[in-house]
Length: 340
Ligand code: NAD
Ligand code: UDP
Image 1: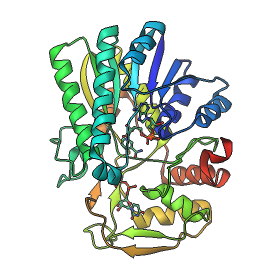
Image 2: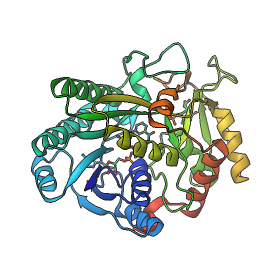
Image 3: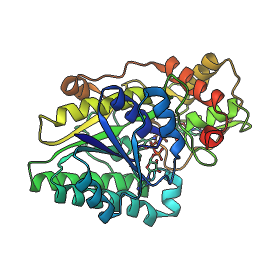
């Protein structure tokens, strides 16, 4: 039996494929390479000694999905494929609803036709909106996401809840990621954003490697430890392992299950800069800039449910996140571009 990994050539997908291959699983990747390249999977093969099969195509393509399920004995699906840039989602909302909601809908319809009913979905802490109290447990009511990207994640969660209510044979995981950072310790795969990074860590590593001049810290007047925004950064390898734990649980527990995948600890932007400088030995020049619209002051998880039910917890600390992010960026200053 095999696992279908949509979006498996991307940042989190490629790290998850490594962990799955190393655990002896058969993996098929479906990716349209809209935000990735074949190079990531070639690197996965370098790490694991096994090249995952790539089907280049779109998750919204119903005929392709039907053929895929007919030709391969898929037992479960991990659904990473989608668009993820918050600012772009405000400018092009229809693309986000089409890819993220339309893609998930087409996938679930094809899974239903094929009788494959086990699914792990990449959701996000953004579905909680801006709760007043930290840390955030899964029992926190779903909030109102402030942008189309967050709305699309929330809409898919709603759709999956309705699906399980209509047919209890489904087993579905809603994996709510906090802030994935870092890279595989080999330095062979990592985050490779297109254009100027939106996220903090890739911005910092690109400043350190000389691709960007200086970081803008968005706001230093939040009610936090030093006035800058606080987030729950999680090493991408820990996050990837969370998927294996969730898939194991789903195989014996039908129904729908939400889990926070975070560390339970929040760090401010200035703490991240300091940790990165320590790990890399490189200075990260920065200026204080106005707050970024839509940002919350702080956000960190209560990961106790995942610990209790999955036996999973994040084990790689802040220093490892920074060291691994730097190993990837310094070894691949232009990301995968050199490998293409
Ligand atoms: P990524 O862009 O690196 O990976 C997504 C992959 O999906 C890419 O390889 C892209 O080519 C592919 N893809 C996009 N649309 C597709 C389509 N229609 N058909 C087939 N393939 C398609 O992003 P990532 O950081 O690895 O994120 C993976 C998932 O996790 C996404 O659903 C994202 O929304 C979610 N997520 C990411 C973060 C984060 O900070 N990185 C946080 C929370 C949730
Ligand atoms: N941030 C920043 N400068 C940047 C990018 C991000 O100061 O160039 C801050 C942002 O305001 C937030 C934190 O870093 O407090 C994490 O932002 P990111 O976009 O990485 O993740 P988010 O939690 O917003 O999804």
